[in-house]
Length: 79
Image 1 (cartoon, helix red, strand yellow):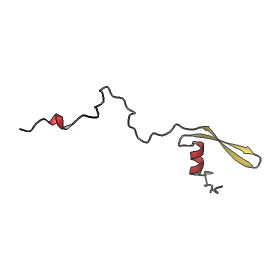
Image 2: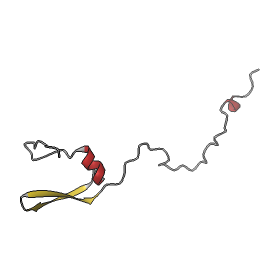
Image 3: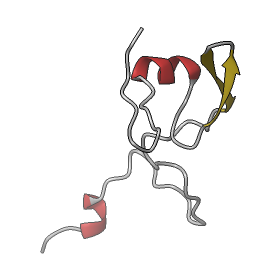
Image 4: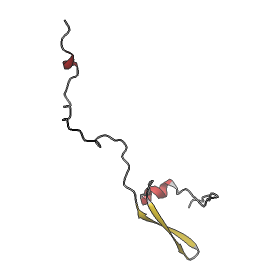
């Protein structure tokens, strides 16, 4: 079990292993409950996963370029 320091504002950092196990990310909602002489953390809403890149998120009216497209073919032949 990790020991954590509490800041002057009452904040602590949830250890990475705990965040990963519970699916806690930026924007997640959590709830604390007092149970006897201890506090329990409950995940209310885990935020959706963050995309590692923005590829494919935007839609465009033009059709996609085929993977076998050769840019050099646009340049034409040299004279």
